[in-house]
Amino acid sequence: TAHCAVGDIYDYRRSICTAYDRRLIGDDILARYVGVLILWERYGEALQVLALAENGATARILNLRAFATRHLGRPDEAIGLYLEALRIDPDYLPAREYLGEAYLMQGRRDRALDQLREIESRCGHRCDEYADLAEAIGEVPAAP
Image 1 (cartoon, rainbow, N blue to C red):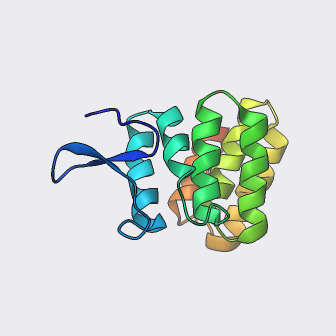
Image 2: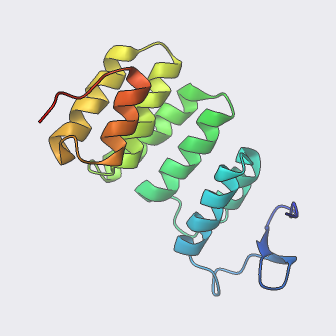
Image 3: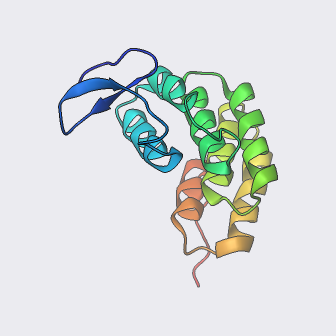
């Protein structure tokens, strides 16, 4: 897959890098594209693309920025972004899960457990975010 210049995104239909145009590609598609970059562990590139978002102050965009930032080894900065995402939408469970993981990077298991409890209060043990954070912490959910 091509690495595009800053301000460009990869057009899979035409197999070329093309200038990002907000009129043609909204933040939803941009966020999905960033998700692919993250899967490929291209975190720096993901941050460059996220800078193009029309509204960078949504829980989803902030969460993606935080995720890429955390994986670039900057957990303190990532925690600030996750907290900002949760101020916008306290029920955005991906941000809670990843915030817990960022706390684990810092050795703050107690704070990670706080996020696990917050997730549990919103979806019980039945959502992926709960299971993933519980596994990262090493907690085994109680049997129903």
